[in-house]
Length: 134
Image (cartoon, rainbow, N blue to C red; front, side, top):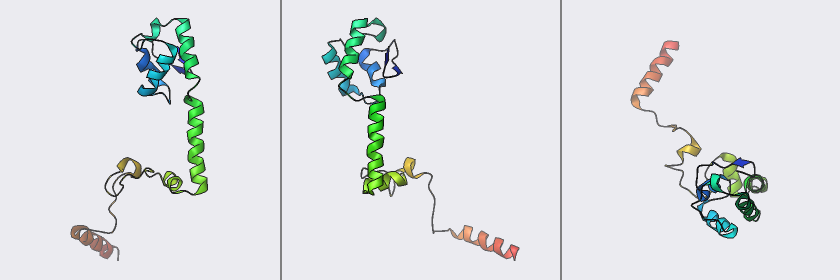
């Protein structure tokens, strides 16, 4: 079964398989299946054509995949262009929702880099190397 250009796995339950769509989570699935009047425990391969159409119709009310991605990108672009704090954080590649960055945020900030403080051993090695060049 394909919805919005995404192929849903046949052997998964309907409530799990629908979460493969961008913008559909576990809480949204409950409402979609209730609107489509389909049991959540049915496998995708066991759905009839009518069931597939009802799921597709129920998903038309929710923004998913390309529409949602373009809206999110437009929102981020607006924040960047207007020079808002959140936009600046997006530009710099830092967390934009108030997380602590002094000691955490390694995935955003990258590998640790010591700046300023040099140990005595390293300082003596650097001096010795400078004298050797001179």
